Image (cartoon, rainbow, N blue to C red; front, side, top):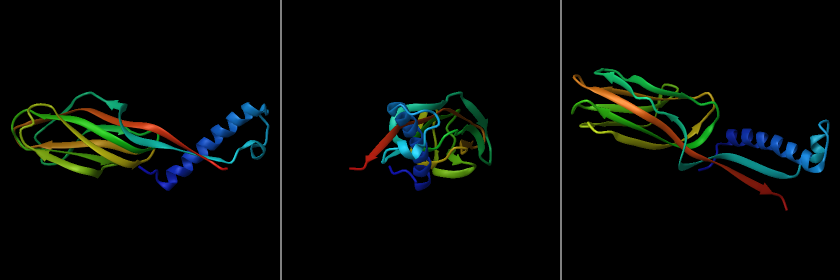
Amino acid sequence: MPIAPNEQALASDIMAIKRWTLNKLRLGAGVDADPTEIDEPNEFIIGTILSDNLQISNAPERTTTESASFVKLKEVLLTAAIPACRLKFQLKTAATYAYFAEVRKNGTLEGTAWSGFEATDWITKSEDFSGWAAGDLIQIYAKVESGSTIRIRNMEFYYDWAALIIQDP
């Protein structure tokens, strides 16, 4: 999955700093060395790719009872950009009533709005997302029909870091 242009620029800047520091060490340059004299003409792009490797987990179970409107049950504040990831969570209801759950970014629906009946056993929901930035709040909202309770647990982010090195000939 491609990285958005603004994320490439940020990742590229970070990698340029790392590359400059590594090249200073490799070339034996001092702390006061001019980076334009050390930097090599390589481009590094770093981002995330979808995978089944768990990176972030918000496991505790949260519950809400009957509600006409959605209630926020889980939330994670991203401290770094996640250009691509797979989000999974589990839900369960106390009885065979209609349930509704959705993933939101900063309070706005992001992806699928799930609904169904008879979730009396734990059901895992999974969806792939892209374009999440540092500072975004990723949330799970849910509601359930009158007379029941909905439980959400194991909000999990799956991805791997990937780096692409482009070398000039």
